[in-house]
Amino acid sequence: MIKVNGELINGYEGKTLSEFLCNEGYEITKIAVELNGQIARKKDYQSIILKENDTLEVVTFVGGG
Image (tube, rainbow, N blue to C red; front, side, top):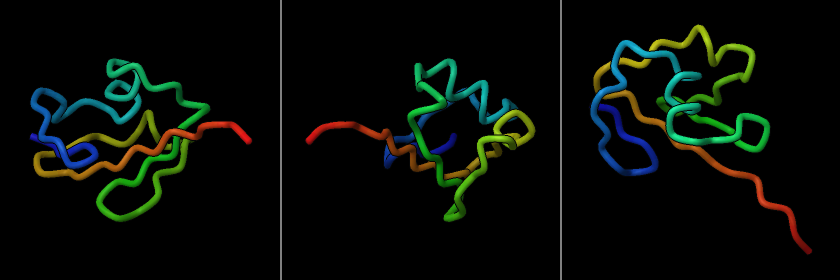
């Protein structure tokens, strides 16, 4: 299991961060991701392999005024 924004999710261990984000419907250009307390660089999303007990915080940018 991995933890995403405080919620436990099964089935993504061994998958890339990019696969997770795409499968969950995140728009890559409008988010920032923290993995285990470190900001993940967008260029690394395809090479980061998720492991058991990883913790992700995904923040979506919202425009407005």
